[in-house]
Length: 255
Image (cartoon, rainbow, N blue to C red):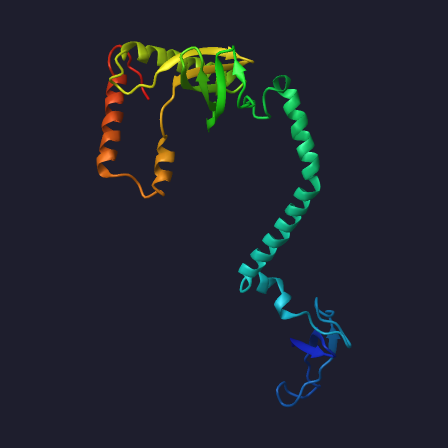
C-alpha cells in the first residue's frame, strides 16, 4: 500500500511518499509497517530551508484579492494617479506649446483646436457688431454678446463651428427659424427672433435678439432650490403654446 504525508522539515514544506509493506508472514496491521520515504517535491514557493522565513501572510495574493480587496484597489489607484500626475507635469510645457501651435494652424489663427472662433472682446465685425463677451457654448458652436451699432442695441450672435457638418446643420436651423418667424410675425408663440445671418472668417453667424437668463442661470440664482409652482406653470404654458404652433399645417415641424 502507498500513502502520502505532508511534513515540515527545517522550515520547508515537503511532500513525501511512503511505501507501506509488511514482512513475509507478518499480517498487515499486526505491527508497525516499514516506511521507505521518497521525496517527490521541493520546498514550496515562499518557504525556504534554513534561516529564511515564510512570506508574510498579509502579502499573499489570495488575501489581497479577498479580505484586503479594498486596500488593493486603493493602492492600485494611488500608484496609477501618481504616475499620471508625473506624466502630466513632465509634459505640461510641451502640451502648452503644442496647443499654441495648433491655434496658429487653424483658420489662420482665428480658430482654436475645436474649430471654434476665438472670441476677442472689443473686436468689431463689418464695422457694425462690437463683440462684448462670450455668454454661451455648445456642441454646434458658441454665443457672443455684441452691440449692433446700426440698430443701437445688444444682440446675441451664435457662431457656428468652422466644420462642414455643423455648417450644413446650421443652414437647416436658419431655414426653420425663418419659416417660423414668418408665420409668427406678431411674436405670439414664443419663437426666438432670428434677425439675420452672415459669414465671417469661415464661420456662419446667426444674429438673435438678446434674451435674459437661461434656465440654468435662473436655477443657479436660486441656489438650485427651484422656482415657484406659478412660474413653472408659466413655463409649461409657453412651451405648450410653442409646440402647438409647430404642429400647424403651415409648419408641421417636429421638435
